[in-house]
Amino acid sequence: MIKQAIIPLAGLGTRLLPLTSVFAKELLPINGKPGIEYILDECIDAGIKEVVFIISQKKLMIKKYFYNDKFYKDIIKKKRDPRIINEYKKILKYKKMIKFVFQEKPLGTGDAVLKTKKLIKGKYFLMLLPDDLIIKKNCSKSMIDIHKRFNASVMASMKVNKKNVSRWGVYDVKKKIDNNNFIIKSVVEKPSIKTAPSNNVVIGRYILSKKIFNKLLKLKPGKGREIHITDAIQSLINDNEKFIGHNFSGKYLDCGTMKGYIKSNIEVSKI
Ligand code: G1P
Image (cartoon, rainbow, N blue to C red; front, top):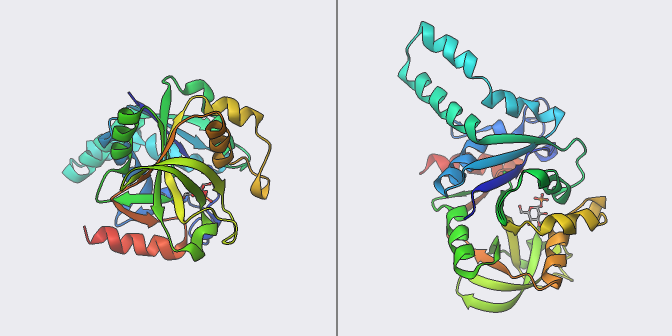
């Protein structure tokens, strides 16, 4: 059973400047609700009981957001507004399930994952990248089902136009399981269009084995001198760990860029 999720939140959000100059991008509203709450709701609905947030001193605002219950309490005492009471209960529910670890230097997603090593209890855990919003169908839930069926690691994926592959991790298929699930042969971080093995790209939802931590400990920095989760995954594949690429059926929204963020607001408002 997968009961724990981790969420890397130490990124600077430079692609969303000026909105992120003093504000955490994950708290920016998407149709009136902070982006991170969509991610947490996806976790809760998928049966996750504990979520580890990887933050930095610069992103302490995220911790404050979930630890501001006294502020709510004082307001509710003066004015019993049902809407505020509801929000207060929601914050309390989230607070109970969140743990925090720190990544002070932005050394990559792999490095962020490594910071959670001591807290992960089960054989497998879920990771969600908060820039990637998936609406209409719970992607994490579908991936947990696939994990249970095949007892394997899983990555969310989709097909993109070949000219855009260099923005993502890209994988090659070893064997097709069905129309939406593929056993992965290899995966490479942000390849050039020329060297990309396919147009199957990785989206920010992963079910990873605890074995990934030992791989990350040994890993040297890769592209852009960062420690990439993709490189640790390739190393596990080399050891015959089964990885499944799951083409999810929800709608993908990229909240990490200005254009994508604006589009996300419009798309979510239509639901
Ligand atoms: C990360 C991963 C990449 C993946 C992407 C999904 O990249 O390194 O393999 O395709 O998330 O959003 P980032 O968006 O952090 O550059």
